[in-house]
Amino acid sequence: MVSIRVAAAQINTTVGDIRGNVDLINKYINHAIDMHADIVAFPELTVPGYPPEDLVWRRDYIKANQDALKEIAKTSKNILSIIGFISSENGSLYNSAAGLFNGKRIFTYNKINLPNYGVFDEKRYFESGSEYVVIKYLETILGVNICEDLWKNPGPSETQASRGAQLIININSSPYEMGKNQKRIDLLTSMSKRNKCFALYVNQVGGQDELVFDGGNMLSGPNGELIASTSTFEENLLFADIDIGEVVKSRSDSTSKTNGNGNTKPFIIPQKIVSIEKEYANQALKEYADQNQKTRLRPTTVIKTNKLENIYKALILGTRDYVYKTGFSQVFIGVSGGIDSALVAVIAMDAIGPQNVVAVSMPSRYSSQSSITDAEILCKKIGVRLITLSIERAHSAFESILSDTFKDTESGSTEENIQSRIRGSLIMALANKFNCLVLTTGNKSEMATGYATLYGDMAGAFGVIKDVPKTLVYELAEHRNSIGPGAPIPDNILKKEPSAELKPNQKDSDTLPPYNQLDRIIDYYVEQRMEPNTIVQTELKKSDGVTRETIDKIVKLIDLNEYKRRQSPPGIKITGLSFGRDRRLPLATKW
Image 1 (tube, helix red, strand yellow):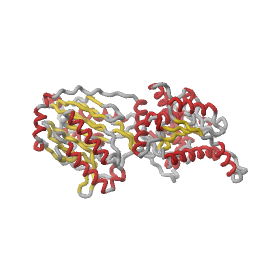
Image 2: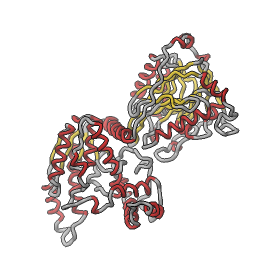
Image 3: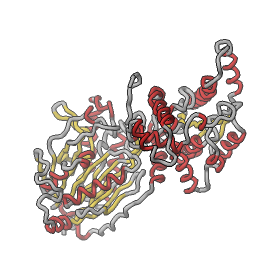
Image 4: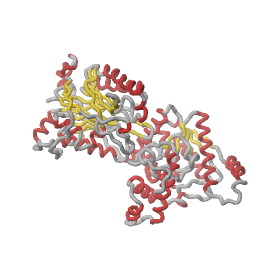
């Protein structure tokens, strides 16, 4: 029996904080050493942070990340550390993985498949690698590749397995989105089953601007079984003892002549085989000889979570890291007594603590007493400070200033939006004065249709629920109440009909269809990229189907309000197609 102990480090790095990232990496290498691991693997571009975007063009940034690698190598004593970094060769830059052992870089693998879709634009910065590596280490043959390489079939994993790799290590910086983790599990387990090998998936965790990384490190076996996985949305180390004899047996039992992948020819590119045996220190050889005397680790539990739990954790982590990584500690939130601001306030409280959240109520002449009271009850329940600033005097002053100019015109959305812009000015003044961030409270349904006011309720630094449809807002609020302690969001807020309260008896339904219908249309048009005619045909099949007139109206609103979304603050991405990062349309277009 050949047994090897692997560790997968799920860590929260920060783009540009190379010193902090090095300290974090070294901390986890030492932890892996204390646990007698033979290999420890870290996420993609873990040294410089991911995604580095145009920092990649900074030569001092590239040099600093390469110098950092040398420092990390000194920590890698008698353990093979696989580290993501940016390498440079002959004027080209690569998204790379380095193998460090006893102070030396033993190998470098340059990512072959560069994603260039959605939030990814790696071809803007990096060249594709042209070699893969197969590593002989402690009587085990390893293959190392990076993120998108796993999504290709046949890909580098097939080639490495065809050259004997018994363990494939895939390092990632894969952002969270709803339903994505199951796709990763399916990819990893099917790859390991095709190639009759173990497969270790390593992902980073943490928030970086709009992106949230959920981690989810996991190990699959040669029969395609998921052996272990870690908790998501938090730092941790996955440890596992791998019996390489299982790969030998599985391959000998297989009658397939093609590694089970159905391809008569493996994916072939120039090959590099690295042997680390000659690099062993005496201590490493001794530890390997004594390996069978180690206390064998029990299999790590496979962690299962549900959809709402994952989304809520993503919103907490994304909010916390955006606040802290941008150098702030406190936030202001405009609370109206409505569901959106209530959910954002509770998320902020969970993310950075109630002592760091200040709620601001800014009632107008149209604010109902129940909304004012609901905001007060909410803040009392979650323990955040509430500031109340009536906007009546400012509202009256604006009306007076504009009265001559607006004379003989009909009152409408312009007058309504003045109230929202007063609120935006007030809360930004508070943030400016007290050096805090403003969290906006608009949801995806509002952002899609333009049901928001530029320089008003859109004013702020970060949109916590910018990518959360209104129907999902209610689900998340119910979920948060269910997990306790207590039910922080008042029942009246959950039950009341949504209203901007910018004129007497106003309801969202005066302007928009019911949110369950609206969110369907947005999903069809934005997420699924359906054409209006296809949406109409789809809706005709539903008992509560929407009319062609309503569909055309919503589609037009989505198209017309691209200019608003372009000026909105960044917000946490949770869907497959978020505004800004994924969906980018021209502002001036006749299409």
